Image 1 (spheres, rainbow, N blue to C red):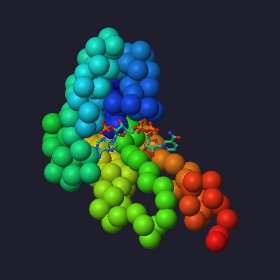
Image 2: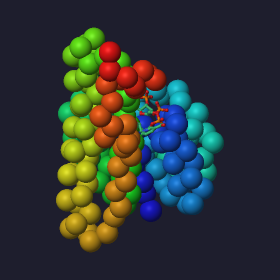
Image 3: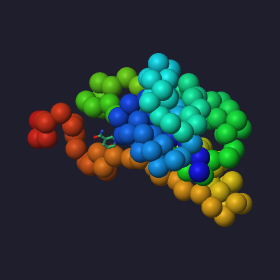
Image 4: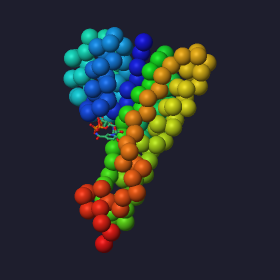
Length: 146
Ligand SMILES: NC(=O)c1ccc[n+]([C@@H]2O[C@H](COP(=O)([O-])OP(=O)(O)OC[C@H]3O[C@@H](n4cnc5c(N)ncnc54)[C@H](OP(=O)(O)O)[C@@H]3O)[C@@H](O)[C@H]2O)c1
């Protein structure tokens, strides 16, 4: 089995990479911080391919898919949150968040699912946050409306 994990340089993605490799999976690990991906690769025993890229860029997603077609497990994990007052957060950060947390997930899921349906096998795990469903004004402990 071969798994592609976005956001494998730290946190949940790195732990999933370790787990799947221990189970015998070969991996494609994706993130921007090359040094962390290389450190992870050194620790793992299965075949590990590194893709250093920013998944918020559409062209990178197409490149990733074209280069790695033989994927049995896709884990869409790369993402981040920005907390604070909506009116104060800059629009570039928000667009970057939408491209990373939503557009990249949509594209990778579509591209790989089409292949998986043709092969009649495969798994996709989308890592999300319940924070996205909470109608809070802020997420910094100040839960009361002013
Ligand atoms: N930790 C929590 O409590 C929690 C709760 C709910 C949901 N989540 C979700 O779980 C996922 C992992 O979170 P985590 O806590 O493990 O966070 P983390 O340690 O900050 O890891 C995020 C990973 O995503 C990668 N990443 C972020 N933006 C990227 C981009 N534009 N292109 C490529 N890679 C990118 C980071 O790698 P580079 O910086 O090297 O690119 C890193 O490997 C996220 O989607 C997060 O929203 C986390």
